[in-house]
Length: 200
Ligand SMILES: O=c1[nH]c(=O)c2ncn([C@@H]3O[C@H](COP(=O)(O)OP(=O)(O)OP(=O)(O)O)[C@@H](O)[C@H]3O)c2[nH]1
Ligand SMILES: [Mg+2]
Image (cartoon, rainbow, N blue to C red; front, side, top):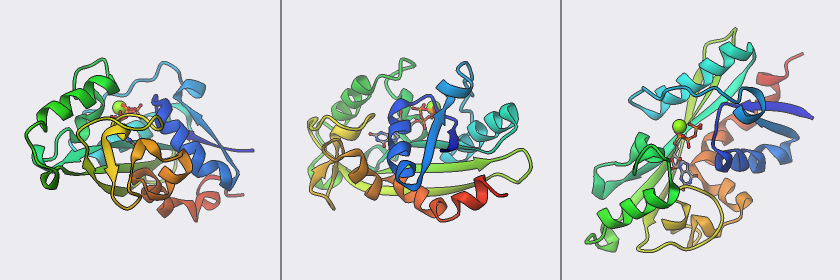
């Protein structure tokens, strides 16, 4: 099977990528498979900058083409926070539970019509020989007042998707891929994956 390397430590993201790329005939490898110790500091000020940092570091290390994903949740009532700090919003432990708790508390007195938010995903593709590039996908939603659903990761249990009338964590991985920020960013790539990764 053709292999695609994703520069991520996040197992939830890896699952999303598998659902998106598996049906197209690709196997997903992550940092856990190819460079267990690699931890790139996310010092950029945008999703794109951080995705490029992660992708170029691993592409240089492995001398092959790789993908990275930098993503997060922008909440309008919080002026776009947690944004690029989504993974560590409640501290360096990167706890999904603590992050959701913090968001719910900050929105305690915010009414439903003001709880609009979006997931943003920047995908970067880097290789030893070509200029790296990025693409972005988004997914609009509303922050609920309590958790619901068992699937997904991160803030999925508190992110209501009006288009599906369900929480993100109530969707299967395949359903999430069809409408998510990650899926939307990757759609732009999927049609020329073979050209990019497996040129003869
Ligand atoms: O509910 C969610 N559904 C999603 O689909 C989603 N995508 C991103 N996020 C949040 O944003 C952080 C990314 O931060 P991030 O891009 O730095 O990734 P990360 O640090 O988790 O792993 P890595 O890829 O950097 O190794 C994640 O941890 C999550 O908190 C999501 N939450
Ligand atoms: Mg990260």
